[in-house]
Length: 391
Image (cartoon, rainbow, N blue to C red; front, side, top):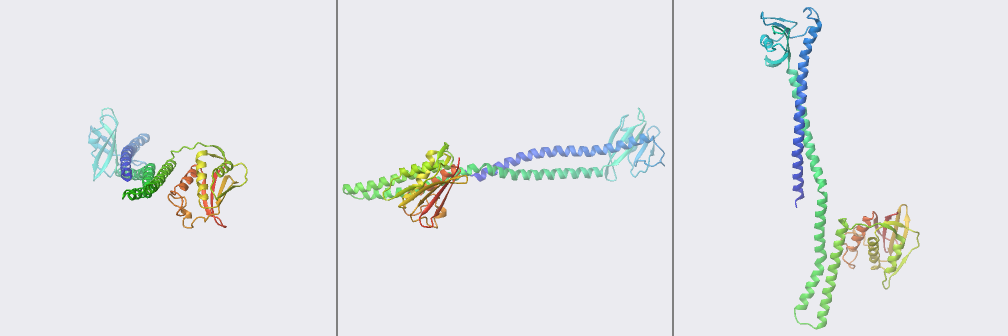
């Protein structure tokens, strides 16, 4: 599954939908804005005639006369400019277009578009007032408004596409994580099964190469069984780790005394030549899944027991944490391995099992909102510290 291609496709779909939505809104905004601009031009011409009516057609010597305004008489075919004029409109044609009711008309003069407002003075339209206004400033305003709106729309679409690309990436993160887990699981399974399968194949081939005594066959079968058990254990641990990391192992939380659990784990482990001790502590109550938390502590304790002759389990409280220290007198961790001790298949030495136990233990503690710290003790040996939130 090509998630990058899926992300691009989702971004394109989101971009097209955003472009349609923004384009429609912008088109409507352009229409409304330009209509308002030209409406203001019409209102300006109408206000000229209203002002004349208020002035009761004062003489041309009075101040406040409008520019480019005429009194037109269609019956006698004469025109009278009511102030200074610098345009020659088709006055009779414009006056005739009124038909007894006020109207607006446009005409061209000297390469510019002009707006004329015609106000009839009688019912038969024999006389009218005509005022004209240059539309060039309004055309410029309309063009500027359209440009700003379309530039804003383009910027919005670009921002929407960028946001869509980011949102698509965020939405596909679970799919990326799932694919990564699947890829890691396949790689880990191949890594874990490679050695046992090689042992099984080598032992079987060696046994079948020629006739042998019964003890030799038994020895080969024991090697095959041990390798198969190791492969089965590794696969089980891989499945458990994958289930924990995928969040499929639901925690059944309940109040649990960590100090008593440490004593229980110490009492359950019996290894010849190894001494386990637990320290005295007060009640440390945490919210935990008993089965999973016990598995984690057992894994950490068994890891210490496998490498030391003396192991101490000490529980205590620190601020809002319940702390369990698992210390031993073994060789400790290699300094180069110490930062990676909880990585998959990372072993502290050539012994031990699959190298998945500590990774599983850390995943369990993480699921309990806790953490694990590892270090080497100053007087020798390893120290693993488990911290869990106090209830």
